[in-house]
Amino acid sequence: MKPLALGGKARAVEIANGVHNHQVLRLVDASVEQPSSPNDAVLVKEAGFKLWAPPYAAVFVGERPEGTPTPLAITLGEEFSYLMPGDILGVHLDTGKVRTLYRRSSRHNGFLLTERCNHYCLMCSQPPKNVNDGWLLEEIARVIPLVNSETSYLGFTGGEPLLEWRRVVELLRLARDKLPNTAVHLLTNGRGFVNPEIADAWASIQHPNLSAGIPIYSAVDAVHDYVVQASGAFDETVLGILRLKERGQRVEVRIVLHAVTASRIVETARWLARNLPFVDHVALMGLENTGFAIANDRLLWIDPLDFQDDLALAVDILDAARVPVSVYNLPFCVLDQKVWPFARQSISDWKNAYLPQCAGCAAKANCAGFFSTGRPKQSRVIEPLQTFKTIDQEGAALRVA
Image (cartoon, rainbow, N blue to C red; front, side, top):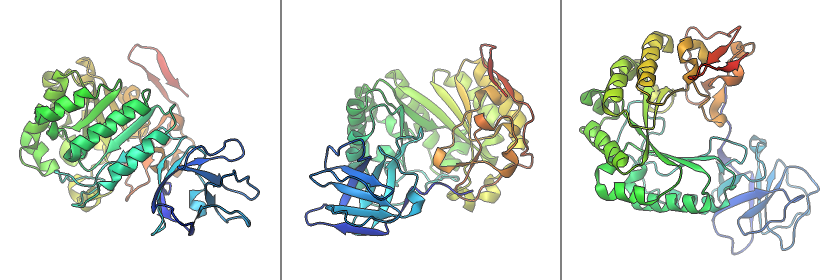
């Protein structure tokens, strides 16, 4: 299993005078669309393309055809063959470093706002770094106006975005103005919302579909603080959620399931149903075995089969309390059938994979599958389902195969 290459190094970069070193480029198909801004670059995957006048930048995948003058020419390897018109690249011309920032065909576009964080979570998939990475916010501000207006969803993550809350709020306002029909979801540990000024600023954005995803890993404060490696984090997280909800903001509670949290998931679900029944969604998430999860493997790894019953009970508790709940990142074959209506195809498409034994599974078309990142680990009971049927919460057939 190998994830899609969203970053790499250009085979060649040819630059004319006056071209800025850090480029954000929207790819266009020159056979059907004329580049309309300096941020447009003609995407060339084969010989014989038409170059519009005045010449714009061009991105070549594979070999660069002869006789293609352009002020900026970037040649990429075949690992970038998935690129399509409408996709957006970030390119540092001095180093040749290329990153795919947005893919028009994907439902899972997300932007890393910072690598800095005030947590040090045991299973962090993006280990924090103490770096000056404010350029990321500047880059994303250049990307948002180029994103297709029909994009249904964008995610923002970190690190901890609220460490730069003023700039992040301005970025969210930009998304509201440029992409008013796009749902925006920002992952944060929520502690910053303890500050009423930050909670007020967030509410003042008045985005029609903005939500904050905030983790609560246990009903026991000491356990949550241990998972995030930050004393006092539980109290501030809960207060941050309360501050947002009293301002009418959307909040999702996230719980990553591993050996420390899964053993307490029933207790945590009861606590949420009793104390935070007004949150907009609870996401119960399978572990991505990458980043710190690899270093802490002996502490964290648990076969999902071994918490199958507790997970089913936790879902039932939340559902009975009318708290919207979903299960992410876990395949159907490790879930109790009662949980199937709540399971989602949640793993980002660029790192989503299936095992050979999934080939004949009746549920594959609807299944979350597996992470291809890090060092993937699978349950001992991965096997194809011969039949697959779930019932939605209204009692109607949802998926049948």
